[in-house]
Length: 97
Image (tube, rainbow, N blue to C red; front, side):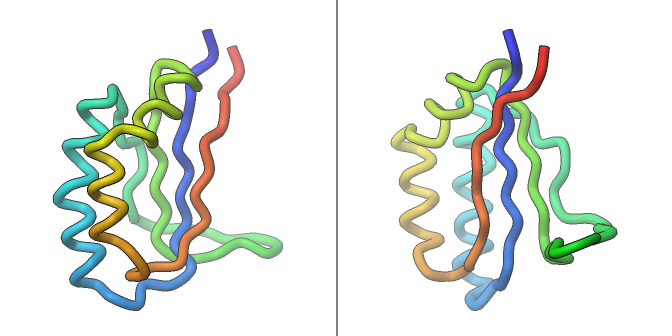
């Protein structure tokens, strides 16, 4: 079964306090949903129209698990705290077998 991944690239962070509050809630929500953080910040080499900001990559055992974790009550609480504190590109993608 193909794995599922959350890919999140932050274009701007307008409220670092909201982001910090989100991080405190999102980490446990991701782990509870079966996610494993593979990349969280760190160095980025961008090409073409890439964004050289904070990048997060989270792995799940399946695409369905990744979707369910995003829809969970715990993660929705984290999103409510984050609110308009950032502008980001967030997507869930299916890996290959």
